[in-house]
Image (tube, rainbow, N blue to C red; front, top):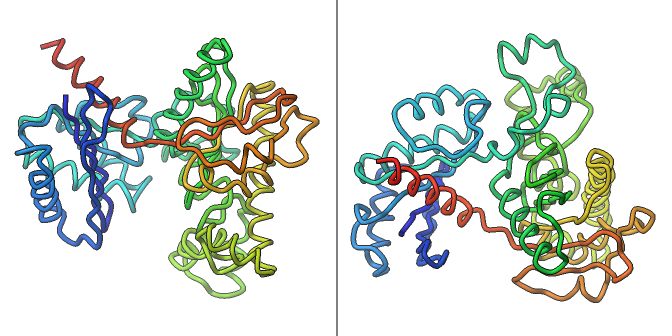
Length: 382
């Protein structure tokens, strides 16, 4: 079974082709500075043909599409039809930067491969089981009823993937029952989020109605006093659009030290740059606060998972995020932490009650697996 995974952004198109019999990626590509998605998908088809892995997209068993926002409509991946397209379009106000581009990619792919089953996999769906007490904001309830103002959460595909990887690993190595596992998953990249996971289900997550809430990110501020934008509007005359740009694109690590790449920030901090060191400390302090909060929400945990570009590759961030948490049963092993491995890696001391795992994420493979499952079920029902 060959599944193509598409991630259609506003100015980019990412794709990966998988052989699902081996869960193996056959080829991948990235097209940037895209202004014409139809031309971009035609270029992708040419790249696939030149790779020798696929003669035509008509040979595919399925196409899986990443869709950022599924609102309350989509709790699971879904086979795409006209009704699904209409529902995704109605959700554009919740994700005006992402859903339109995702939708464009889907429509063009359906035109180019009309006989190939296509599946939408939503970033938000993994968090749709969190309880009301975790997703309802302390605002007038009518805003939820009329406008669906609530916590949705994102990075769900990544959190789902690493949680399953952790469950399989801990069941095999430690005899842990996956149905009883309590995990904190930390997806740390340019976008960062935490998830509290029990029995494979998300029960809380740091990102909110939009990806702006929660942990400090590359250019997003994360949690702040919500009155700050009002104060800035009064004192500086900034418009709503300017404030939106400030909080989403000029804040976070970039706002603190003028850099948003953690590798550069660590290098600058090692050279004595004060604000880079401050940015690292703020970034790790916020992670530590969420670890404590989610341990309380879960009534104890079995493991912490680090994933994402920073989570997988920065031993410094992992070390500082776990520092001085021995009283919670979290003891990181410095030597193990500094070893780099592309497989699941344990980095806790033997005396640590809590396992600390570094797990490489693979969102594209997760989308491919979910898409293959939908396609297989569809064929079984024909």
